[in-house]
Image (tube, rainbow, N blue to C red):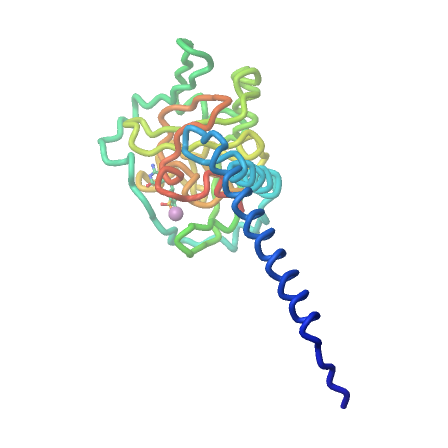
Length: 248
Ligand SMILES: Nc1nc2c(c(=O)[nH]1)N[C@H]1C(S)=C(S)[C@@H](COP(=O)(O)O)O[C@H]1N2
Ligand SMILES: [Mo]
């Protein structure tokens, strides 16, 4: 084998080149760090370079999961013993007879709708795999009015053109924000039946959201208020660190 020996001059040259490269890299790293540091922070304390990555991620999540259709199953595949999970916003006595859902069409303009009216609207059923973020899932069967049909019936198209819909329990204890694509999705229901029978109280009677394109956290039980906005409505689980969109 032919081992190459370096002259002293060659060794010196290579050492100098290495040192120069090392300092250039160091200076480059320092410059990048300074640039990030000097950018103004957003209200939430995120620097623009990082924030743009977060926003790109959000856009990706929204477009990838916001309007995908959930696989549907035959009614016979639905479980009979449906799991009950989560009761935030459901601990005050329920006024079944006097119940009205309040729809904030515009500031100072709130529509109040009783359950008889909602039951008279066209009914849609969906059987899908309900997925909780905690790791369980089950095929369940629901019936109610498509949110998009509800919007059409009450002439809410203008309000529903906003980017988000917010839903809140009557006591204000549980609340979700939903992007428009998911809210207007044909599988999204304001639901009053489970397994062909009236919705049980612990499952959200008299009216709950069923939104198969999202994880369980978004399926708000006991809808008290519906409102629309171009900024993200407050969201119970997003406030506790979960992804705002929680899409599937
Ligand atoms: N009002 C209200 N709705 C809620 C919750 C809650 O705590 N309060 N929990 C959510 C979660 S985490 C899940 S998984 C589903 C569970 O619905 P279920 O009890 O019908 O199975 O409801 C969602 N809707
Ligand atoms: Mo959940």
